[in-house]
Amino acid sequence: MSLRARVAVAVAVVVAVVVSVVGVSVYRSTRSELFGQIDHDLTARAEQVDRQPRGFARPGGGRFQLGGRVPRQDPFGGIVSFDVLARIVDSNGTVVLSLGPDFGVDPDLAVLIEARVSPVIRTVHGSAGSLRSITVPAPGGNFVEMARPLAETDSVLAAMRSRILLIGLVAIVGAALLAWFIARSAVRPITQLTIAAERVATTGDLSQPVDQTGGDEVGRLAASFNGMLDALSESRRQQRSLVMDASHELRTPLTSLRTNVDVLGRGRDLTPEQHDALVADLDAELGELTDLVTELVDLASDLRDDEATQPLRLAELAAPVVERTQRRTGRDIELRCLRSAVVEGRPEALSRAIRNLVDNAAKFSPADAPVVVEIDGGSVMVHDSGPGIPVEERAKVFDRFHRVEATRTMPGSGLGLAIVRQVAEAHGGSVSAGESPLGGASVGFTVPTVDD
Image (tube, rainbow, N blue to C red; front, side):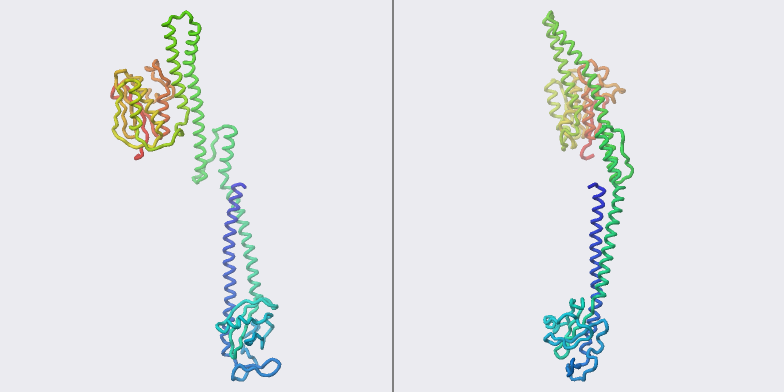
């Protein structure tokens, strides 16, 4: 079932429930009102029984005496009319006198016993149809039963039931049709999103956004979908650029390796010194190639999804990085914590970014020059004593494979700072490069803290 059909069915069900509740309530209220009017009329007539004559002529001759008065011709004294039936019943349930047509139902002894305490009003069904009757005690131990036919009332209620059913059916069908057309208009943007998603899945074309007019939920969904398309398009562009740049950068070390291997294969007349130098060169080039491939893999990975975020302090991540670099290089590296703050981040990714900054500083600084790692809340800045970064290139050093002119002859892949930028941006931060107070470069990143 389509979404449009489900909306129409849901609306129809809701309207059906509401119409049913309202219809039943109206029907019951009307029925109670009609029966209340009949009961009120019967009760008013019954209250006059004690004020009527005490005797009347027995059917077939003789005399039936209720009291000491002389009976009149009309024993009911005018308490009945053309639309009310009446009869007098003795304590044994025998009808001793009737006015008008027969009730069509025999007296009920249980009702007569109950009527001695209070009047009994009930609905009876006999050969004459449905009747609303009242039974009250009369002088002399007898009972008076009066009844009104319910044919007219039943007809009114039947007509009301038909009208309620008809109106309810029309309301349900009308609501379902209206919901169908409204849902058709409401789900049109969702249908467009579905078509766009299917088109992207089939063709891979990310350049055709969907209409995102309106500020409602559907409009925001369309805007999110367009944002996703833009992100996918940018990711695809970056992947293509990375592949092209990587192929260019890999070509040089692979060519050098092939040349050295060829020379080594043909160099049977090489001296031991030449052979050792060639092997050392191969080993260095393989090391650089390994580092390059490792950094390419890290850069191509989505660092935002590698691990879950958690509260941490950058000084605690930087301390083991500084210690390992000192142990590996024997260089003096100082860790300064100006201000400690908690950040929400991924520890492995942030540690990798700090390690790249420290490795870069150690690589480009003189062997006897210090390196300072400075932590200030959510900021990490690494100061070195190297050649520095020209002002015009400070914004470019974080691009993939970009290398400052003065350091092109030094080993490196040109991807370390690109990974730093990717990690910082994945945490909602930024990178920066400037002049170091030690005379070289200051390179680092800043990420938001929990207090920001």
